[in-house]
Length: 385
Ligand code: HEM
Image: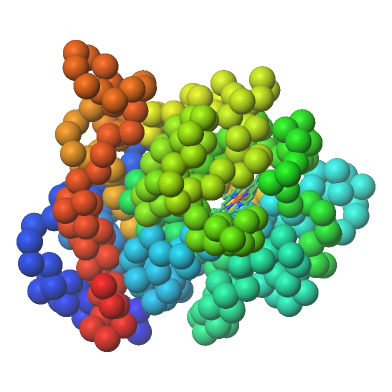
């Protein structure tokens, strides 16, 4: 009821706050994989005018509390934007799940995985590999407690909402029902940016993820900043468009030059050049639709490592629609996937039919799309920009 009332108020507020018509917010093409449940193929059903599903139209009773958790995270924490908290949530989802090991599982040893241990065991988040994640954990724990939901599911939802808060980020199937952690995650399972490519491939394989999954997933660095790899360059980004979910990360990581204000992780550079990974890496350059589809599938797998969907319930129904970058680019461009989504095969696009690899985004259209996306969460006094 509380969530329903707040949604009514917010819808009314949202309709008055928007001064100008905004570009259409449409779903991403291509749903992630994943077997059953709510699915992503009818995202407009039971949603508000700007594509945000309403609790009054909940299809599965198990999902009802998650509408309010969604609002607390997307509205309260992220304020409907691709903020530093949103990027931390994406990284947190990986740092909880990425401690899963098939090898440990086969040997019945204490294991990691998407079990929420990074939130429930205070020692885990204090490890140096988790530097920078303490704040998001301290913000998510009270939300899980307030709504009586599991920390593991809450942090995976936060990661999925973090991706959606970054314009261009795809919708990723969201599952609930992860078991509580049995132990703190074993040490040494998260990949290091100094790791050699064969070791990193092996570590992801031990999680149950392929090279393609791994290369798609590290594309999350499109919206990342670093603080601890080189503290002298704290806040440097991994590409020049940190606030949007685009393929510039792949383009700029593989290029010889280093763009001002950016920093390249050694592991990302190695992936872009190593014979085992370079083809997968290059495949995503200028391939927005291809990448977002592969990313969504891989992120979903990451979020349920070691678990079967038969143990879980899909609550994908609660997710808002993506902001489609192809609606906010300066000019339509042709690309690897037939044109939409900012694709392209390389070069500046000047002259003839040469496609644009990373078409520039129109900042006015982008901001209008963001305002439409976040309008339902705009609460006077809580949302500042
Ligand atoms: C080979 C695998 C990976 C390595 C070595 C790696 C390493 C790193 C490092 C060193 C940072 C910077 C941390 C800091 O100094 O603040 C970082 C940031 C980040 N990583 Fe990864 N990462 C990997 C995979 C992933 C995956 C699979 C995801 C998510 C799907 C991810 C999401 C992020 C995000 C969103 C940030 C930015 C966090 C922020 O801005 O606060 N990373 N990663």
